[in-house]
Amino acid sequence: MIVLGLETSCDETAVALVKEGQILTNKIYSQEIHKRFGGVVPEIASREHTERILEMTREVLEEKELAAEDIGGIAVTYGPGLLCSLLIGLSFAKGLSYSLEIPFVGVNHLEAHIYSPFVSGEEFSTPFLALLVSGGHTSIVKVNGFRDYEVLGSTLDDACGESFDKVSKLIGLGYPGGPPIERLAREGNDKAFDFPVPDPTGLDFSYSGLKTSVLYAYRKLSQAEKVYRIADIAASFQRVAIESLILKLRRAIKSTGIKKVTISGGVSANKILRKRLEKLDIEWVAPELQFTVDNGAMVGYLGNKLLEEGICSDFSLKANPRLFL
Ligand code: KG4
Ligand code: ZN
Image 1 (cartoon, rainbow, N blue to C red):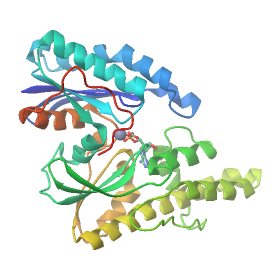
Image 2: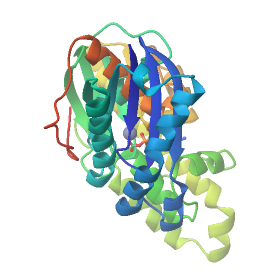
Image 3: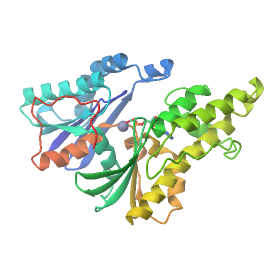
Image 4: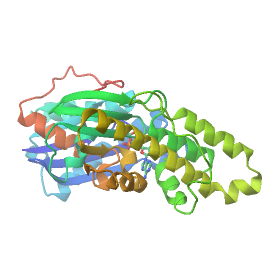
């Protein structure tokens, strides 16, 4: 069966075609317009989705020389995310499903991220630990079986990616913050600033204190220092942000005895995070870079599995901005 995967939960309009678990094509349109506002403007995001989604669906079909009638099912993100953005993808999926008389299935965006490392490789057998690190979420999830999840820890305030975005905005690097901070950090001394590693009890995360420490340190700098020490700030912040992920992950590995780990979400593209995992005595897997950011392939991949098991949604399905695992 060929499955159309649709993702519009935030500011990426993403469309993919998946055939029996294999990605045929994966197109992502990252809405650059939000850069000038330093963050996502929900109304603009949904307008951009509306303008792009049909055209992108046509493009992926044309690229594979397929017709709409060749699609056997549709997978679409229905939460969590921005309500007006989710509604565009979900309404489009329902319309196509109705007119083509094919099933559609609503996919949980977080679940799709968890499965994203397997999109281009072999799946881990369960149980395994999933470190989900994106702009909206930071969690360690114990995956006991297919769709059987135990959330071991989550952020108490800001998400890890969100802290990259906020620090980036503070030091004038723009949105999204992860890639420019990672680039600039290569030129800096990551021990120059001794920001404390956030460690709320157990397996929970906290990133708002780290952001505030960076803010205070930055404010103390002279105008000249704000220029020549900016790479040190980026490197020191990144070291501590990643250190907190590793600290909690090691704790989760120790308490569960599970040594198989996946990482996923936008922050899983970070090379320092990947280097740190290399040093742990574990088996780990990360998504290909194109599947770290929000993408239709991970939605189509999981949707393909669900549809093959006869799981589909009906037209009463509502977008759920606060959906969790
Ligand atoms: O998964 P994603 O595309 O969207 C959400 O579901 O939130 O993640 C986007 C987040 C942003 O906060 C962005 O700054 C962060 O992922 N990010 C990174 C990197 N690339 C993207 N954070 C750290 N290092 C990166 N290389
Ligand atoms: Zn995401």
